[in-house]
Amino acid sequence: MTQTTRAVIFDLDDTLFDHYHSVRAGLMAVQKAYPDLQQRTLDDLTHTYVDLVESLHIKVLQGLLTLDQARIQRIQSFFLKYGRTLPADEAQTCANLYRGAYQAARQTVPGAIALLEHLRTRVKIGIITNNASFEQREKLDFCKLTSLIDVLVISEEVGVIKPDPAIFAIALDRLACSASETVMVGDAWNTDILGAYGVGIRPVWLNRFGNICPDPSIATTVTTFEPAAEITAILLGVP
Image 1 (cartoon, rainbow, N blue to C red):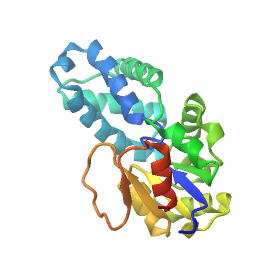
Image 2 (image 1 turned 90 degrees about the horizontal axis):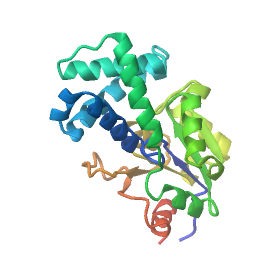
Image 3 (image 1 turned 120 degrees about the vertical axis):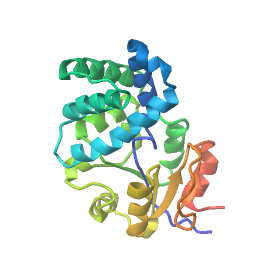
Image 4 (image 1 turned 180 degrees about the horizontal axis):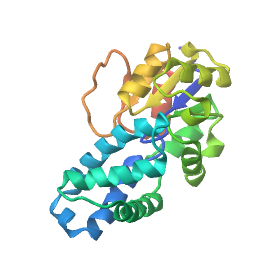
């Protein structure tokens, strides 16, 4: 089979950067500081918190909340779910505690760096991510990912968010590749997979947590980035 793939675009959070790992580290720090939360499992706390992240993050992307405002509201809403009301000053202190542990635990998704190193000798590599510019660039630098990518498209910088076709068009233009020559790898079905599929980019779903695939006809599924050679073959569509 002749290789036709010239570029691979990745999502960042929970695709290359292990956001889930950092969230759990942050929540462990909060749980340790508040004994009443110790009656709950970390899985329960994580599920509650992740739902709140998703609901408030869209307001950040829309410019309705700053990151700091969202963090405080998220902590207050989180504690309210467990029957406790936190005043703003305590919520700020708790948000700082969470943030410190989150930052200290930053790491890439297992196999991500090896995969990028394997791919970059074969194709161009891009990232499309929905978030604040400083936040995402800091993650890339900390995790030593910056030098491994050719094109970075951040929603705050371009004024449009996934799954809007325009953000994919910007990435394709910067990569100088057509949709048919490009693969999109992401963990979020609606924004990454359906967004890419809608503009003719072949999507590959990273499903690390054993979720049920909404539509196997739309995307190839991988559960890990290891070993790099095997995942590269899947991404590039070669036997």
